[in-house]
Image (cartoon, rainbow, N blue to C red):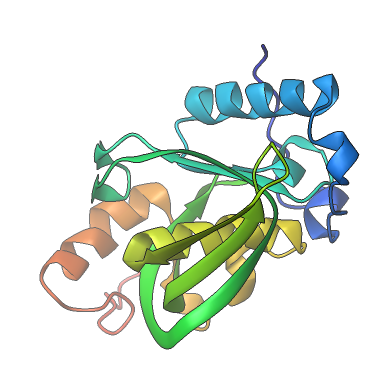
Length: 193
């Protein structure tokens, strides 16, 4: 298959609501090629989730795959490749928690985003069967992040405190050490500019 170019913030497709896939499209060669390309792209870019709009395909399709072990988001549990067609999220518990999110369509930036931490995901598989899964914690955040792309939203739209947006190098150098010490970044800033 092929590695596709990931479009970046500013491209109009990232701000459009993607169209639902029709059942008759699920078994098409075109869709299977798109999914294979998305998997190759996800692996090549080193991501853990990818939505079709990010490869300039405005359809309601997203995939999640977490290899497990150390990642740029810390130590994560393995999540096998999950392909979600026309997904919908049901909030099971509104209790929110925040993570420093990044995005392949916004390279080089991280932002602190709070989201509900217990969700149920409803979607079609490639056979057209309805599926459902529950996700909690960071995995719930990953699904919500990817599905936001299907509605034309980016993680930067969900940042409540603009002081909690950083370039990845500065995040690793200044923010992450504070987070590890339990002090939220942005609350004690060095006054020397």
